[in-house]
Length: 346
Length: 241
Image (cartoon, each protein chain N blue to C red):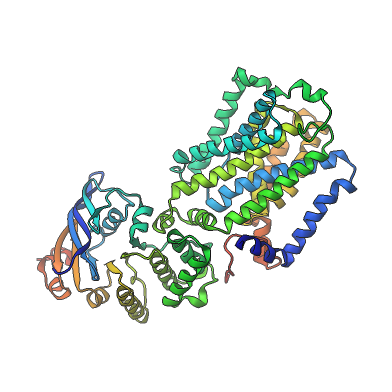
């Protein structure tokens, strides 16, 4: 397997060794740290990393900027919840949620692949709001009140079959495991034919067509893969919190915009950039939200969102290629799996 | 004319609002030749290219490739079928290396990365870009980018290559190199349709030339016939007579 050989080579570089060490720390973290709040926060970081990686397959690698990933997230979250009511294990629910989301994303790609750059972004933004409104008014799936997990799950003893634990550690490993799988899969995809085609589309759609690439098809494929993992992340949310409502899972700010910011901080031209971005941004955002919402009081509601805007402004002006791009440019670290291999004689 | 037409246009018409960019254009491209397409700015040459390669759909008329009607096919299908093109303003994949640029096209034709890399390396060698294989396209000069674009088109293993001003902007030495390259491409069995403004070059390399003016074909012939054709002279000098 070419991909496996390449991964081995990547991991033997300096950046690869750092990555290895980080992975080991991530695995043993819950054994060392007993603080449940912290473990829960890290679980959220991984969940957002899953979304941010998926989002960046579209944005950083295919050139499709989405402000509507909450749609895929919500589809995954609702699918799992509705299947729980039919007695289906969340493992199957998560997979089906991802697949349903992927199928929807693929079909969405047909009309949306006609939308260029910011028109695509606007389309996804509007779509997210449409889903929010539809689900908030859809009685059969709980309407604005959302859905609680079935009562018997709360009453039955915690099991791996139902994933109905109270403590965050199992979900921490669930999210970490899925993130690892996603990273591996995306790495393999990006280093094979579709990966090259995605990047060609990002660079120049006309030139991609002239190179024999079915641009619409490959946009749809990119969106489907992205939709799949985002849907799975929605499933993680459902099993972790046991309660979903449209304002939470179809939230533009909390779901759709988070991966955008994480991606931009970490660097969209690097595979692991969005993970680094999530690692920095998610805890900061949650912390800010806690201070602003809790300590400063409701008068300052929304101030932390404004501060995100300032952060983004500074990043796009100072380090437009994000942290990983900045490191690469300085030659400090050849980032893992950056897009476009070669040297750039700047 | 001798030989069989590998590419044919029949009565092609393309309107943009009130403007008729291509007006009843019919042409034959014969297997193995280098056909020049010239005309003043705005004559409709690039539009004709876009009609042939599927980037624009003609309002009327058909395009045949190997006697197969390819009118209205999507661009990628036409490219895979065997009609490759370059762009007037080169459009390399800037963030990707020279090698990757060519590999992408090669991957459209072959399945495996290794095979695509082999094809790409051979073509980079052919166009004297081997030492730049790991450079990003954004770091290449204009000449190198033009060559890269030709390599990318050749990676599709085309039967017909449409070149949109591959020579414009090159210095005399580079022009000679490019002409040599074009001849070698023809020797590889690729039929070439070339749009160019640099007359010295086009007169030098083409056996046959067609001339467009205001969307119409106004002349067809050998370089010497064309250069003495009063209609052509008038088109270029703007109707002095």
